[in-house]
Image 1 (cartoon, one colour):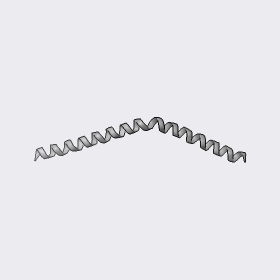
Image 2: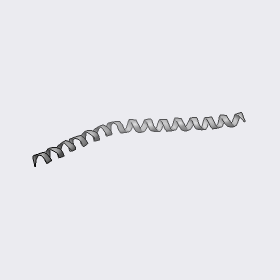
Image 3: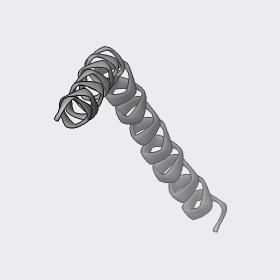
Amino acid sequence: MLRVIGIIAVVWIGLMILGAIFKVVFWPLLIAALAFAGFAGYRALKARSDDAAIR
């Protein structure tokens, strides 16, 4: 019985640590992903307009 309680406690503490890490890292990762998507979209539109100007 103590072994089962110990395993549950270890899993619970592990999930708490993962949750705390996710909470800290989530917003910077979201901002970086949005910035990257915006930059990639800008470059794609710029490349398409440059290609049309060459022709």
